Image 1 (tube, rainbow, N blue to C red):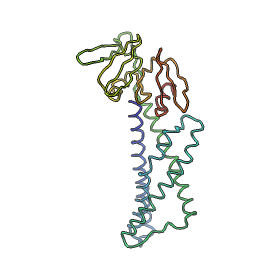
Image 2 (cartoon, helix red, strand yellow; image 1 turned 60 degrees about the vertical axis):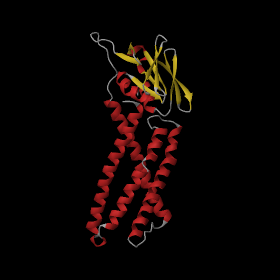
Image 3 (cartoon, rainbow, N blue to C red; image 1 turned 180 degrees about the vertical axis):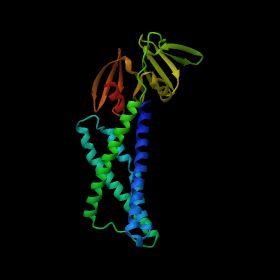
Length: 269
């Protein structure tokens, strides 16, 4: 599975799990409130819990962005970015559920009060800091599970024929060994295959479409415009700002910091 697709699934699976687990806890809280305060009815605790749940879903992109910018699997100063991101998540969550509650109460002809600002804000932000940490832990866990379930790199036994790939350019077809492909670069709707012998072959296809075909054959996406053959990598050099330059034979391919899973794979993590 390509890097972008893996990231999307990591986000989606984590959000679904968090939404389901949180909804169950919210339901238990509502039932407990009804049990101990039946005179207050269902509406008030339902508004309280539903608004908090909606606020969580609305701002889950904040911890996701923090995780993408500063993966905790890669220790460094960037981890400090999680402090302002956790604060931003808390402010977004609290602000959204307060507005939702005010609107819901107003619709009933009543009003909602958040209570003492500093006392309640500190309490809510503390809970949201924990929720932020749990989201990050969820992203890490789901990423780990996906890496463990990733198909192993293509292995060749002596009895197997070497894997090949067909590069089509109009009516022309070139069948090349997968191991002879160093990298694939994108140019709009065309892709250029760079071969070990220096040849360059073009094919009318998007890089995203080729990614789904080549990833099971040992390729990884390192940049929005590049796929490279992991087995042909000969070096990895820092290029500043979290980016890298990957040496693939005589070729140098960029590795963007936006593809942390590609870096982890090239490092053998």
